Image (cartoon, rainbow, N blue to C red; front, side, top):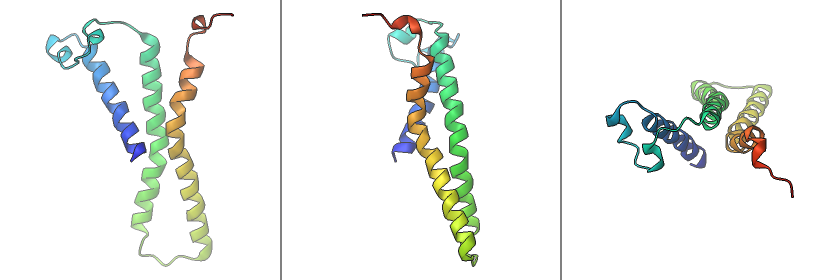
Length: 120
């Protein structure tokens, strides 16, 4: 559930970003936040959102492939070696699925502007 919720939040963010920056007043009216009424060109956030979306898509692809493969081969009789290989593949796929939740943190840390850091 948490992984699917985070993917829907990313989709909602993309839709809101599109609605707030649209040239059409009708589409802009879908975005209800006061800040989104003004069209602000913030390239850094847009780049971060695009990179996050692409990384999410790339890291979600293996789990989809693994689940399709598991459903196709569910009725086959498998050797112990094949079962061990499939278990290893499932573990690798689960690891990539869990990186979806940590990727935004590291991406935001590395892409933030250094001007925000003030010396003590």
